[in-house]
Image (cartoon, rainbow, N blue to C red; front, side, top):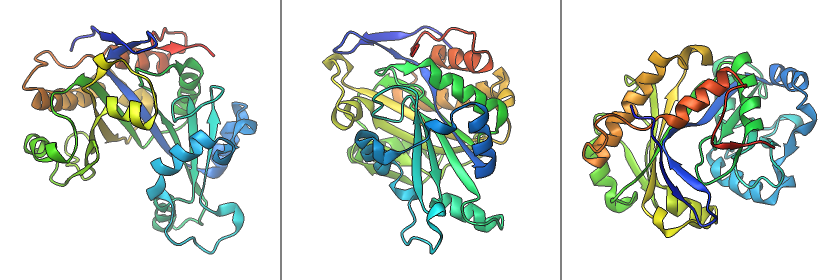
Amino acid sequence: MSAKFKSVKNAKGLKVDFSTGIDAYRFILSKSSFLKFMKKIELNTKLRNINRNKAITTYVKEKYKKDKPDEPLLLPEDVKYKIRYVSFKKGVTSLTNSMIVIENSNELNDLCKKRKKPYGYYIKVVFAGLYQPSREVFKETYKVLSKFLRRFKPYEFDIAHDFKSDEQAGSSSKEWFAQRFTRFGGKFISYKTTIYENECYERFYGLKKICFYDKFEKQTNYHHQKLDESLRGWHRLELTFKLKDKFIDHAEYDRLAEYVAVMDEMINRLTGNAYPYGVDIGVLGEQVEFLKDNRRHLSFTKSA
């Protein structure tokens, strides 16, 4: 697996590295444990309702629209569906540099029923946008994430690889994509410039979801970023894996190599074996080393 970056620049001169990195971690915790921990790390006063930020409100409500119960349960106001966030950067407009906290979603309500807990017992914590080559990721985001990883066990994470693709993701390429990925799942869905598989075969080290999309299109039209035309064709393959152990265990080289091996095979299926030595793992390596030891260097972050 090569550790050499392939770099281009966006319209503002910001270097964009095509590599592989962890883009998200998700936790499901008891609300009481979460609040105690937030107080311990002195972030309890930083938790804000998303309605205080119009930009993030629009984005988060669209991102998590399937989480909201169709018919609100007859519950006290303090256990209604809601989303809050902590920002690690002033003027945050996306999930990058923020921590999202979700309460009383469909997923959490179902879990409460399954485990015979009262509604509102669990909360979901999401650190997303951790690997975004065209954005500035603040080191504080990683520092807070590392504290959560030392204390709690995440239940899933996303690994993403960026590359140039001649085939644009979408309905016109769904069959082309499905033919190459039947080994991993059988229910592929296309929406605009994205192809999903949300019911993967878990024998691939807990593989849960596959998402292949036009990253250039998303950043320019959805996030309104101005990117250089040389980046047109930039696509991302994002894989979600279920986790059953703590960070210190799944972040060991042998375990990470399993997840990367799945990515290697998929990328080669999409590119006609253009990666005989595997995908670039430069960013992934830096992320893991920093999350283990905050004194390590992160070349792709900025200090607040």
